[in-house]
Every structure is written in C-alpha cells, then in structure tokens.
Image (cartoon, rainbow, N blue to C red):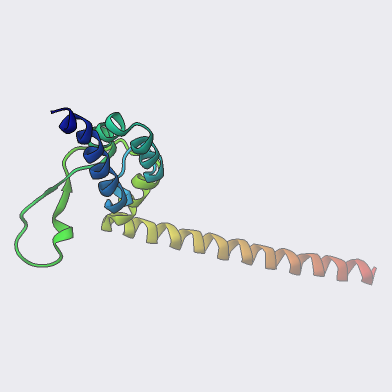
Length: 136
C-alpha cells in the first residue's frame, strides 16, 4: 500500500513531463513550457496537478465530415486567457487573421513607399535650393 502511495506522484510527474514535452506550445497556458517543466520537477505532485488543471488547453474534436486533415477539426473547449506566445500563435493560425495581416502588411509597404518618395522629393528640393543659392 505504501509503495503505491509513493509511486503515484512519480507516475503523475512522468505523465505530466511527457505531456509537457509533446504538447504544441500554442496550447500551453499562463507560463512558457519551460516554466511548467521546472514546476513539475520541483513540485512533483502539486506541479503535475496544476499542469493538468490550469496549464494546458484541452481541445474538443468536432465532427465536420471525413475529409482533410484531422487537426483542422480541433476546437478549443473554453476561451483561453493566454498572454504572450500562445495567444499570438492562435491569432496567427486563424485564416481570417491571415487576411488582416496581409492587409496590414500592404498598408505598411505603402507607407514605406510614401516615406521613400517624400525623402526623395525632399532631396531634390534641397538640391534645387543649393543650386539656386549658388547662382546668386
């Protein structure tokens, strides 16, 4: 009986570490993966329980037919309160956000082109001013 009670936290820690190492970083909540690994090693029982309760994002498989990649059928079970890398990865993975990112990049390119044109025109104006000043 005591053997079982002593081996249980070890098995839980090993399970948490395997899950931590193999999980996609976008599904890790509240801390980076390395932080959760340190917590799971330093506090085997409590750290492992915390990892499974609040540290990972569980996904629910939604049946949308039999075509395509099964990873496309994963859907978050609850809204996340991620801050940082995981939230950015989730935003970047969404196709609607990709279109918004492309539009933002196009606006940024246009702004850089306008700034370059203005710089070029200012250089021409300065050259004309110097030319006019040297004629006088």
